[in-house]
Amino acid sequence: MSLSRRLRHAGTVRSPALAATALVALFATCGGSTHAATGAARAVARAGAGPADPPAKPLAARPAGSLPAALQDAAFAASGDAAVLLGGLSAADTSASTVWVVRGSKASARGRLPGALHDAAAVTLGSSVYVFGGGNAVGQLDSITRVDPTTGAASSAGRLPTASSDSTAAMLGGTAYVVGGYTGKRWLDTILAWRPGSASLRTIK
Image (tube, one colour):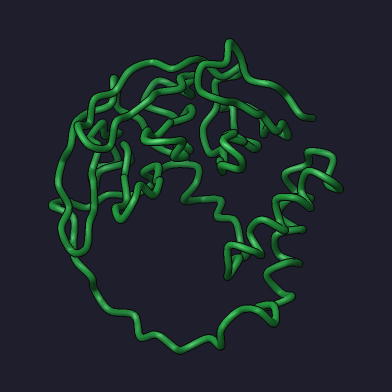
């Protein structure tokens, strides 16, 4: 059973403005602690929508489509009007390498990652999706993989300083921030900053 299914993070942020506020609070006041970052995100979420946000409308949950097969713990990134799913675990609890592009109610296989993985983090930078770390049947990974969501072509873009899965990633100002993670033996409290073409990641904490 994957680690992320045993340890789920609580709290949601209900608007992009609140998400940005939470990330700024993380960098400014949390000192790189993932525990403090989670607390900051929860506090912002509890604050509710600001005056500029439109009134919330209740939405009924309804199926919008389905994947060809069951999938969990895939990395996710938005690309234009599509969602890109990368890797994950199958119903048999085995790692997957497929790159899925979901648009509307349709999902199509667009390519494959260099190797099967699950519990990776992903962000969109420019026209590419970048996948950070993850895990497989052997252990945690240190790879950074660039994926073209149009063709599914994947190539190596760098390495993490520590092999890890279960990280969180976000993009701000053309920079990817990779927060926390799990090495297989310990939790990480690092915040890494990375841009495509960079020789290495910069550790903020």
